[in-house]
Image (cartoon, rainbow, N blue to C red):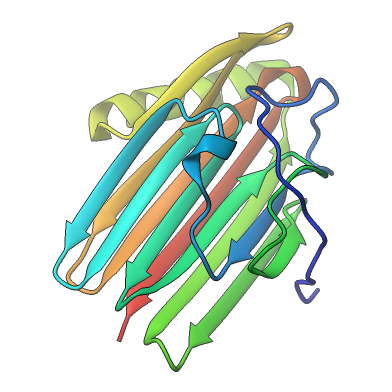
Amino acid sequence: MAPTKAPVKSSNRSAPAPGTSLQTYQSVLYDRSIHPELFDIRERRAIEHGAYAFEAWILPGRHVMRFEFNGFCVTEHVTDQERGLPDSGVIESFLCAGERELERQFESTGIGFMTAAQTEQLGENLYHSTYDELDEMARETRSLAFRWNDEAGPCMSIIDTQRFAREVHAQSYHLIAREGLVLRTQSIFEHG
């Protein structure tokens, strides 16, 4: 299914909505940066390498990643919000339910972007074993991570990044106990 552009507006919520489900998660791609004051950022990491800059923000159940090269910026925002997102500069968006992919080349700027999203709803035992496995991975790799509890148990958001000469690879994981939800994304930001 091809990604579509969706209307979005700005907001400032601190945790996933009580009705969060895999049906509400979306990935939004912007051709600009987004102001950090719009978000409840719990952890952040900035990378400057050669001609590019990359920044990742982790939010409860969500994330924002920005890649800048030669004055041009691409931002990925994965969120459970259906409303209240910035709508200026939206290039494309898609719902994350199931498995989705998006690839864009910005020829005039030399930036390339690829992402894949996958969601799963797991039973309680499998959710907890997945949580433990990803928690251990996050600690071993020193990934960005934020942990909290909802009414059903432990939740966590993780961003793991690898820096290369001309690109950044980023894997994110969002685990929401209430839904048994695990959302995984793999994104590559690169320049020519």
